Length: 595
Image (cartoon, rainbow, N blue to C red; front, side):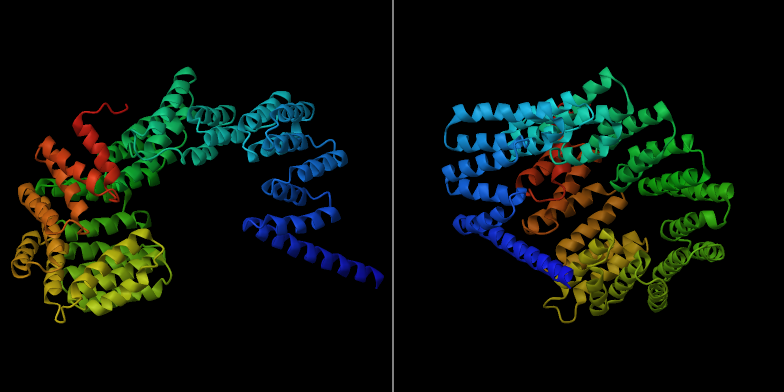
């Protein structure tokens, strides 16, 4: 019974102390230092071993400029714990606050001397210096500790302090020293350095970091420096330079293609098809298993589809698909290839019946419910292609029910919304899109948001919704690869609904279709019209960027391209195209970019 009462008393006291500590800290945060000090005095007197109570009470005295009280507290604490060398640093700082530097400096030196005698105490002493903004002393503390006991590692603290001081060159070198000592530190170093570099390859810090890494690579070639260069180039979206580094790493040890897949996939997603093509080709040449080779070959076909312009290009792609299925078979390992081939046959070759045959064959070998779901979605896409909307909606809904709470189910829901939009059932489409705003996939949620905005902006004040219905029809024709019919429908919209909210969307969509037909002058006219409709329109910066791309790549008008990119740089600072526009402008201007 007595023991139980003691335990209960101990719990009650601890709880009371914890509550008082919280109250004291709340007062401290609010700047009510007198109240905070009163509570901390009580807590400290009950438990002088608590470093937290001691430090907080000391801070209260210093904030109140009760320096004699702080001196007494420090000296008494030092008498009780003479082996705690960091207390010399605290006492010195208290003198410094009183402008007594002649007393402070010897105490700082005494604190460092204590670290020389006991290197394992360096962390507490170094942190004390750092918290009191005595950064040079903190660096000295950590360096001496590592000299005296090489097994200790304070490199990351030293690097962070250099960053705090704004000495970026020293900071980068300290981080690189960490990598030199231990290659596995690369991930940690990347995390810290990412706070100081940007995706602009002409940023001062980017250039400095690149220079320091290159110097180390030249002096001591090893994978660490290639990895860091590759990582830097990936941050800057200089994917081809990253690929060069990854090839160097692979050629040096030749064991792992994962980093090359990373470069290939990211450059593909970011529309750098030339780099992606080179990366996938390198993978095919060096891969040791069919899974990697099949994936890379499939990706090369996807790139070919993106770049295809002539009927001959599409015929070659069809043959490549047939060659892959001949080489790897039509079993479960090539189901994804079969789905992609079916999609190509429908939307690029207008062969829906052949696509259905391939998908039905794929269904017989698909090894999971997720692959079955993908096949069903593709079959429903073909139903939409053939204007069989109700059947398509039933199929998409089945997929939602079969594979709930998955990305495939969310894709199916987005397809339901899109199909309802094509039908002109905008209210049902918006209900589906509202759910998809919280989709786990960023791509799905962004697409849902974009379609929701399109519908919302164009049904407001239009009770019969004629303009949006006509636009949805043009969108469907584009989906069905009936490009000229889509363009003609958009022309009618632009004629009949001038000044309507749908006008900029119609101009932008039509410009995309003109580009598909290689009619770049007509696309330019549309983009220019968008820029003149309203300066704050949501598609204006998109239009300027597209103009820059066409002028630089298709029309070879460098001055015009520079003008378009410059508009984004100076007038649309929040644009998602800003960084790319700046890089492309500098390149066209003839700036000497890093190699």
